Picture (tube, helix red, strand yellow):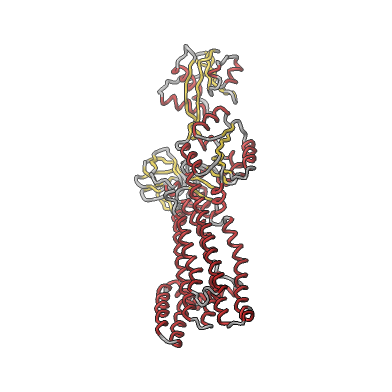
Length: 620
């Protein structure tokens, strides 16, 4: 009962009690010592009672050396030696510092809560001809979901009917709305801005893109950086040492120097107040916590504080090609007929034959033929030859569409200028020409790589399983320094091992299952648009929620700023504390606890305010 009552006072009437204590403290300066004592005692009970209770409770739990215990000793000790106003000041300023701390933490958690709100609790579902409201977790594959303006999609879906503008900023960090229509897919967590959509559930809520994002952010908060781990270990050693030093100051030094115990007890109390590691224990983790939330708000998911440090110091960036540097979608780049054949004839035969194939090359040729309104015809006796191409007949004449290996098998000669064509077309044993296809560079990737170099990335490299000539051309077009093609996933891993031997910090950027070993092995793995790939998510240290290349340099900037702010707080807090400790031992601040309070509470407030800068990723 007492604990609940004190908790109520502490939470609901804190500012009132702090104000009353401040008034009583000011009044104590205008009265004699006896009245000043009672005024200070009343002020102490107003602001100190909950802290004393918390210190006793933690003492019972064997948490002896925390900040409430140290502050309680300092306040009681100040009263014991007649320094009433200083005893009250210790508690009052400690509470003020705590309020700054709580406000900063609340602001940090607000960013995380905004992310958590992307997953709606309920969904409107058509069941047995009726529309019912169900918990999102009860939506199953194939359910028909109704999405109205102002509602969020409960899971990943495909649009059955309707059109609407969707806000995807909570997932991707991009402010521009996404337009969807019949046949388009959308991710769970997207907000419908206008219109009405009938959707088909294609993914369980627990496996949706929004659920994956929330899981990553939640897990990231529990993964500490080296600096956070160092501060925790440091405090476990540092606090007992300074408490022992304070005891020696209060008991041994008066005997050594033959001075009054009161003077050295006061010095010990100053030393004790200064020693509180509050600024370090709060501001450093808060920096990384804020960095995680700020980065997540723009679609960059860090899997913990250690990912910030690894990315901040990296000097080498290695890229996969397909799906990372490129869009992963093949397009027809050039059609080269052999006279007297024409481009139209060549494309018509190739597209008609490829119409029955599911190969990516076939899809690219068919898509291009549709844009050119190329007429197609029906082929007979269609058959595919794995790794080579396909065979068919047109009006009784044999047709061959495939690579140079197929042409060699059929005894059809290929001129040198067509030897590198991805698709060759022959009719009745005569080569009609070749079609060149290529994957297109992802828009903005060149600028992103250039910005990364401007941020101090000393070397960029592309590793790909594609043909060396294609890889070289793509690397040159986007500004990558070196490239290696014709690599298997195991070969990529070996090349990465060689780069990591330089100890310069290696980034690996990939997007798929085949990149998982390299993403896991690199100093920092970045999954490019990896929300769709489970293997990439698990292996990577940083996940980009979409395919926008500008997030790569932005992630580096966020990492470096977060680490820089954490280091600033460490250096600032320790410097001020050690300076005031030394002054207190030399007698430079003997009799003045105000400076000691600033060295603890004031430094904590300043360090926390500095850490709060990590909450915003705007302008980076």
